[in-house]
Length: 314
Image (cartoon, rainbow, N blue to C red):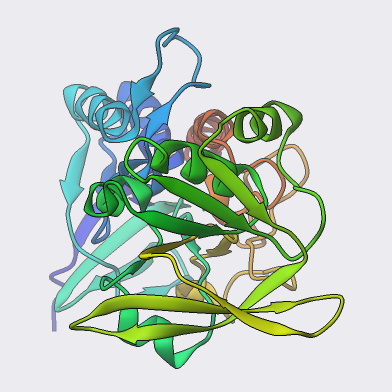
């Protein structure tokens, strides 16, 4: 039977800063890239508040607006898009095959920029209460908690950013952290320490959430990491900010991953262990995880892909 798969020279899986930068560069190189956006086009920045550290925006810019601008720029140079999730990838031979439902895509090169997903606690109450007082997206749900008390779980930059943003709505925000000092950058620490609406619950971990889908969050059960004593705090909302997990399930057994699941790339490049497959952004960056570094690695992936195609005579 004839193969009715669509064929593209460059297929980019993921549409955050890394994927869309790779699209801009490969499109400008006349490679007509296809971006498979996933079910959350734009990546993590679409659920982020104001971005103040991306160069070129001295007054800051909202995350969704920044990603919309990325997308329009990529589209301007000839990038095409599929807004759906990849169900299977086959990287055993070129051209590589990407399956989206019943749709089959062939790519001479594949650039992976699937990013990472927010981590949650493995508790039954989290699954039951998510969207009913528990959230992992301050931008999406912060306004629900106007003039209410909320907690933010975490101690890094994300936790501090979420807590600071949520004070625009909440009457009080308490950061719950398992240690006695924050892991966030000094500037972010100072920002939350200086905010009079932010309090801290040091040396505590969350062990359960109390409430129902109809009544909402009634309490958060916490345990002191030093004494083991459990107690209950009673906010009306809880937000997770405890890190991210790389979205690499599709590539397990095909690409070389580290112990956490990040794609391993050659030092100084975006090359994976499979020639013609490149990875960029948070899916392979466990250290920096910034929009600007993701965009930079997207540029690297595009250039690496161009060189590979040129060497292959394609």
